[in-house]
Length: 228
Image (cartoon, rainbow, N blue to C red; front, side, top):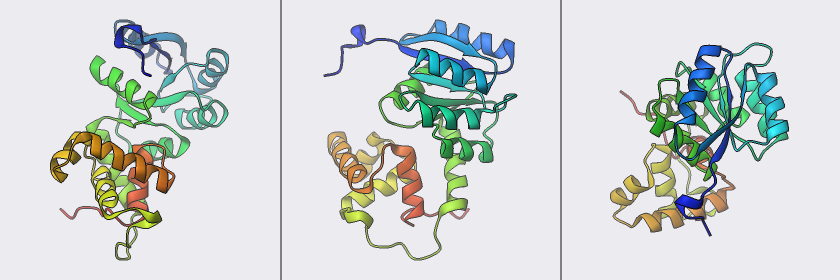
């Protein structure tokens, strides 16, 4: 049973950024946000991995471009060695290559450094609940990058892995970036029904979260890039 909002423990966060002013600013901002507790700050990827080992935080807000060990490599080490800690990439640019590499390394959320407090809290909550915490603009760029890399040129197959037609429809809409509420409106069903379809298709396809579902939808040819 989920604890009531007032009793829920704050998410323990480590901030990793090589720029002191930026790092201290983020730490200060997070200290003002409800539901978050900063337990450590790192100036590079090596230090971030060490702090995760020592402190076992819930989430690391990870800069991509750092000395000694960059954010992508640090993310890979953390997700491999300490899977209980999630990673949200905090980046200046929606850089396709870096975003794709970080996703491959195991990051589950992305925010730009100009994100507001509500966006940060939402991203942290999303990754802790098993969803992808993707800022809308970054999600669009990521989908474009995924479509270029993984879409297949053959005709879309029949629903894969034993998915029903309805489950495939839900998967396609996830791949197009729709929220559960938007999917429910488009299919004229309840949000609870959408969640049931998502749980079923995740189980059948061996998916853990929406980020994997997006990749899966493109890889199976269920979603194709839009032609402008």
